[in-house]
Length: 217
Image (cartoon, rainbow, N blue to C red; front, side, top):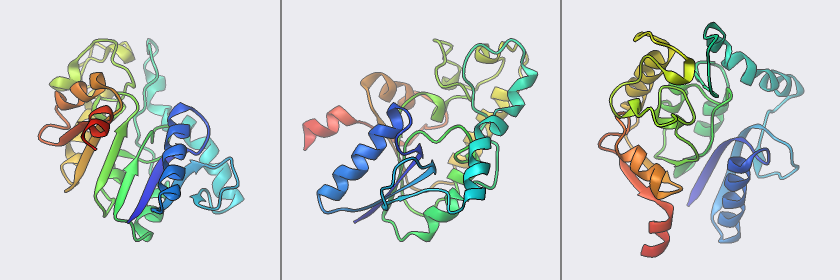
């Protein structure tokens, strides 16, 4: 089996470290595993980062550029990722690898656009490190719960408009995720498993919990 792990970084942040440790564990079990990241900080040859210094510089700017649409929301209250920025090249790198499974982790901060996710040609498994995969752009909804119906008038943005950025991002997710033929969600806690199971964008998708996987094995 060939697995491709996708993360914003290899070692920066808890989600990245978790993805990297899983990648190395797969290798120790004899699984062919590679990791594709936007920001590479270690010298592990099995991690595919920016191919050139120019691309490395561009990638360092992508988090700021991706957040640009949020500057119009002066009352923004929390971290919000529109995931609109194109041309990351990461999806092209993924598709060039003859993988059996593509395992997504934390892919915000300009790593991939929402539309790029639907371009992945292999079955996708997505580990949920926060709520962003199923919200209109926030990483934690603060109890808002609008992801269960349709995001709009977003508290994270300090917005009271129905047709705001969260509504646009949520609509893009609904449209793009519908194009993914094989998608499994992995909750890293029972709480986030339940959130994903009750979300609109993942309706009808398989959602599992990592602790329950361990109990079944």
